[in-house]
Amino acid sequence: MNALGRHLLLELLDCDSDAINNLEAVKGALVEAAKRAHATIVDVVFHEFNPFGVSGVVVIAESHLSIHTWPEYRYAAVDIFSCGDILKPEVAASYLVQQFGAERASVVEMQRGMFLNATAPVANKTLVPIA
Amino acid sequence: MNALGRHLLLELLDCDSDAINNLEAVKGALVEAAKRAHATIVDVVFHEFNPFGVSGVVVIAESHLSIHTWPEYRYAAVDIFSCGDILKPEVAASYLVQQFGAERASVVEMQRGMFLNATAPVANKTLVPIA
Image 1 (cartoon, helix red, strand yellow):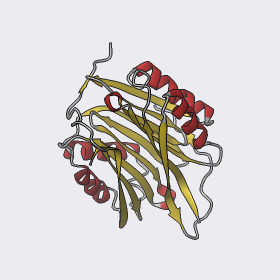
Image 2: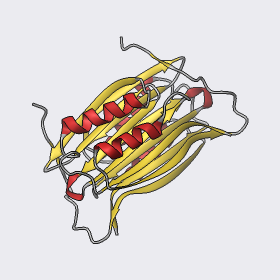
Image 3: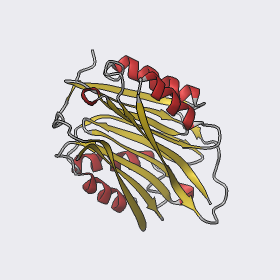
Image 4: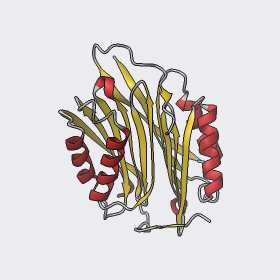
């Protein structure tokens, strides 16, 4: 029984507040995490909030990475949703724990889209160019 | 013990294949779901894949909605990540089940960022305009 997607839900605790409150630092870390996991980056969207906090998504051909940070709690919620056999989500997860100086972290892995007796999924979809 | 974020993980099964294979239809449904849930939309990013499938994210001030569709399996994975008291993620979830004609659906709710003895979080953060 295979799942179409692997979804890691990371709770990053006791992070470096400055690292998770800086838009460029957070964006850079997520993009680098995607690259290290061998993801194909499709789109990158990040925003900063008042009085603090960053939200962002790296859309990848294999699904997405997202982050929401609460520097006032030294906390960040990261999701790494991937499909296919090439991407290594655990590589991205380890890198982000390190980059944000998370002294504690937890990971829950959910299998998304599990089917009995399903034919093999299309392994590598390609992007349709925007007209 | 309060969580900073509520995260609904939806598995939408036996969907209308056409509805989840059309970029504009999927995008329109997610944006409308965000509006109905009283979210503040910040950014909208959708992409279509060959031979089929749509991925997209609606970034909202209260976190994000994301979707990945596998029309060949009549399956869509939706995440609704929200913070604050205003947003009603279950409204968005119900709307999407209906729009995609999902004959079956499951929802798992995860609490993200739970802290003991934490002070009340900043309820409504505002977006920092991009320079």
